[in-house]
Image 1 (cartoon, rainbow, N blue to C red):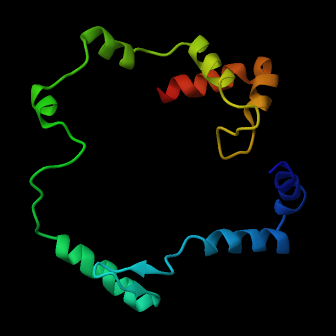
Image 2: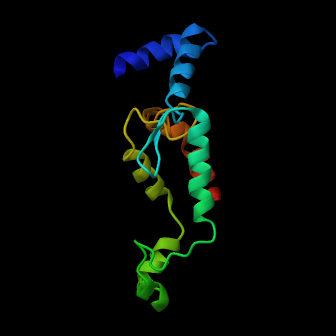
Image 3: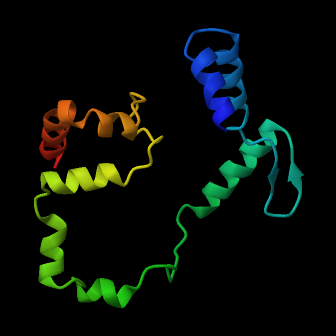
Length: 141
């Protein structure tokens, strides 16, 4: 895995054949190429797959489900299920110590944003970026 990251860092950042091959491979895995129909037949053409999906959802329109799995209706009817102090804890303002603790718990090689900066960068540069990061997070909340 580390070797592939090194290859990407060397080759993938520019507009070259390696970059385009990587994108093509990722996009290849995003399609539906076969589908088993409700009657058990295997569908392999794009047209048949589209027809089966459209038919499935058209049959759902206007139907009624009597019991939803995963939802506890009596609890929904009773209303709040948290004690007031616990509910208040969920909506309390966050502090700068909590921001630092969250950053410390992110893996060193993980990038919390799309800019690619890892948490190691933020930890190492914390004295420099601390105020900007904290202000951005506090403004968000």
